[in-house]
Length: 429
Figure 1 (cartoon, rainbow, N blue to C red):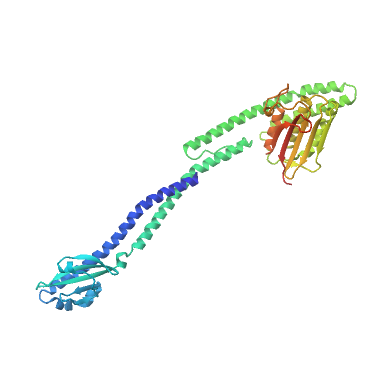
Figure 2 (cartoon, rainbow, N blue to C red):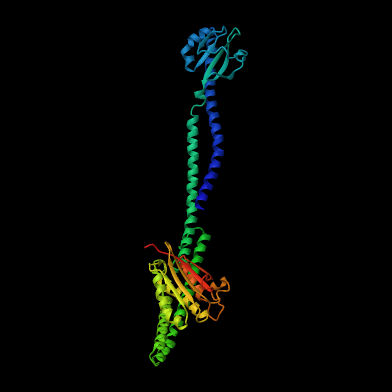
């Protein structure tokens, strides 16, 4: 926008300057020519008056001797006597003096410039012709310098117009850019970002509205966080009661499994409370080894997988796979995908979890031999074909997209059921 304003202003100013300069160039040329001709005419008329006065008592030749040839040559003049002889500068034989001999003054082009002719009448009626030569240099004297000055002045006007347009453009572009930066910062989760209202009234009003919107969103988010923290805190009471009930059970694998499940639920509850109390989510500098986390969470779910008599093909590359994602988010992704398989496929249906490290991308896939997805709408938030909340796949999708990755659902080529494939860009180490 700023650049366009500068170009538009410079173009309009240039056209206006050219519209004025072209007539000025012509006017300067005409003035220089008229000045030179007027000077020659004045010199010729001055010589004619002097010779006319002197020739009253003497003939023209004697008058010229009294005047002196040097005075004639000073003005680049010539006197053509009635007898045809010439006093002063040479006169070409090609020059037509008939109009002057008839008593008329005139100017005519000659070789190298212009010549002004004026007649002088003697007492006997004969006519002498005074000729003053005007070289081309005098006809254009000062024209180039004047054109140069006018051109520099025009260029200066264009530059000044562009500079003024730049100032005006900056007064609009800088506030708009600040609006963009603030909006981007708010979009990344920093709800403390605010706009310093500046610029034209319209842009200043937009900045004020963005600040009001940010305040409103901040209050809504805070209310949601407090609500989530309160709900999670309320879960601690039934968790404590369940733990007391489990403590009364007979020691064994079933009791240990229940205690592990309660520990996991307690850990998730504490995580929700911590996240709700954190005002701004800072994901920019967080990273984790997603291959390690997939291995840990697969090991956590393995007892339940075995309890459901499922065959689980778990293949994880040994090499590290560092991605730009918080470890808690990575754990939530794995838990959501595995829990979907355990909840929505028949017990005993095989499943597979794999992690493949490429040069720049890590590929995570979870497959099963269940009924599969009906269509791609399964990724929609709150959509479920069963009795679940329908949030699992949406949580996975949002976490993957926040790390600049992609999520694809479809049919498993090996097991025939559902397939979820995640591709996450790896962080250079």
